Length: 190
Image (cartoon, rainbow, N blue to C red; front, top):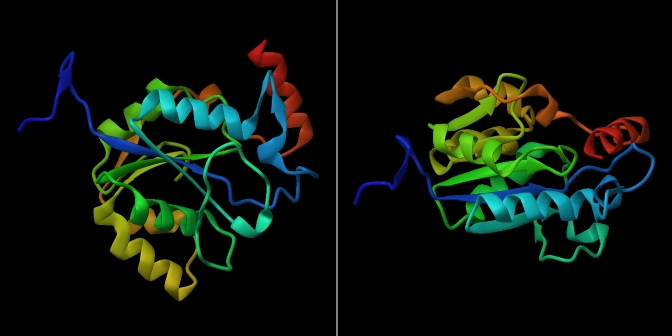
C-alpha cells in the first residue's frame, strides 16, 4: 500500500535509536546521566525518540553498566565510534529506516527527528554532519565494510551513500561536550 501522508509529506515508519556509546572524556563524568531539567540527557533523548517513532532502541556498551531505565543493546564491538552504534542499531531495527540521536544532542525535537526519517534515501543528515541522522538498511553494506576495515568516520561514509541534506535549526543541533555546554543549554531550556 501507499505510505500514509500528512499534508503532502510521506510518513516513513522508522525506529528511533539512542546512541549512548561515548566515554565522555571532555565532559568529565558520564554525559548520558547528566541532568537537564527533571531528566538526565539519556531520559530526555529516550522520551523524544518515543514521541517521534513507534519503535525505539538504545545502543551502547553493556560493559559500562550505567543502569539506564530502558533496555540497552550492546553494539558488540570493542571500538568506540558512532559508526559502531549505527551499524548495530540498523541491524536490529524492525523498520527499513532508523533515526540515530546521540545522547549529547538534547534539544532535538520529535518533529526534527521525523523530518530526517521522511527525507531518508540511504541517509538523511543535517547540513552540519552525520549525526543526528536517518540511515536506511540500504546503507548497511557500506557502513559494515567501513567498520570492519577500521574506517570509522561516519562523515566519510556519507560520500559513498545517497544522502539527503535536511535543514534543521542550528539551536536544535546543540551538542553537549563539556559541563559549560550543558550549563548553556540549561539556561536555554528554562
